[in-house]
Amino acid sequence: MDFTWSWDHAATVLPILLETFVKVTLLITVVGSAIAAVLGLIWAFVTRETPWFISRPLAWLLDVIRMTPLPIHLFLVYYSLPTFSAMTVGIIVIGVHYSTYMAESYRAGIESIRAGQWEAATALSLPRGRTWRAVIIPQALRATLPSLGNWAIAMFKDTPFLIVISVPEMVTRARQYGGVNFTYVEALTLAGLIFLVASYPTAILMRKMEKRLAY
Image (tube, rainbow, N blue to C red; front, side, top):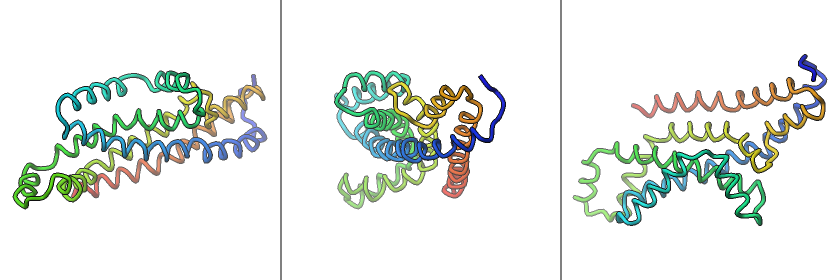
């Protein structure tokens, strides 16, 4: 196995990694983040607004999902639903998994809203649904948006776990290239740099957004 850097190997593997990044890793992150953001808001709403015999079992289920590793979820769902493609399972599972974390962010955002906001909505005789849509959710989103962005970055970095169900994401392709050519240095280094280049600007943007929304 060769551990020296080769620019020829780097030039060969970089287009492969970039193509996989766009078609697999980025796609999974974007779609999975959308699923997680929507489901997380639904979980936060249901656990707060429904009777205990619905909210408590749901809260327990969300805790179980959040406290168990993502690779186990991928493995169990993929082999339980053989009719779905690995890509589809990966998107759904990673979206549902991270929705449990985003639900906690939404919950914290909702609980941070002052009681006077609820009282004012009640005094104006706003329907419960209108109160949520016009008063609570906009303020909660403002408070939780930076946190949601950070969870999306975490999801992006967890896409290599999809190797459990043989989804050919970027790190998997890098390892495959290294195995065929007996050199992992270029492929894995470039994969790491692509992750850094894609996630670091997003992290800076989230930090600036957090400071801006704090005022």
